[in-house]
Length: 279
Image 1 (tube, one colour):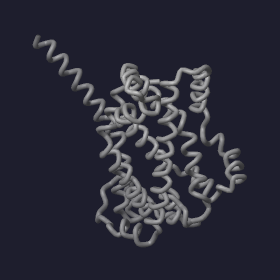
Image 2 (cartoon, rainbow, N blue to C red):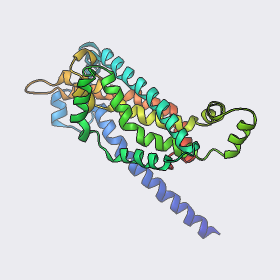
Image 3 (cartoon, rainbow, N blue to C red):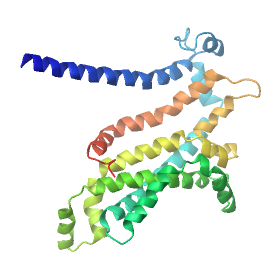
């Protein structure tokens, strides 16, 4: 019995060691980015990974004072919020329809949606640009929002479908006996039970939108409509770049996403452990 317990403890120790190792791989670049924001350009060149000596707090002050940070923050937040809302509504309804409606051709439709996972955004950029130009959506926030939603929908519909298929059919039968149809079942049963999967999809969508740089760069030309990732170009000159200010800018940009993830972490874990990512 003692030997078996020691063997189990050793397995857990190995597992924790592996988890710590991967945590360090993820956290070290983040910590290096944050501490680099407290350096001068000279310190950053001489010792990229060392601690600042002294700490230059003025870098973070300059980010707020000498750039349109709050304007960029508002643009990023607006694009992110509308992207998340539209994505949750469309993906939720699509996942519900694919999981609960048994119509002819539904399997073919699901396979068609799966093909969307194989279509990268970069490959579609030229036809997407031409389409946005014909719709007069260039240099607008909706020109960024709609493609972001479209390219995330296949994966998120699959997540919703997998979660909603696990809801017992007996609950739907009970709703039918109470006089509710599919919409009533969705509103009274499915939505209250879908908190974990909504949080999971919401965080995935939020992080994608918040960090997206390439699509806004192609669509938006007006500096007044720039997002936070594009705002870093304020510190890139013709011949040199103030990397200490750029990294300070990036450090501040990470804060909202990290805070939101921490607040929603409990729901995300619940959504993953309950099979929300099963197709």
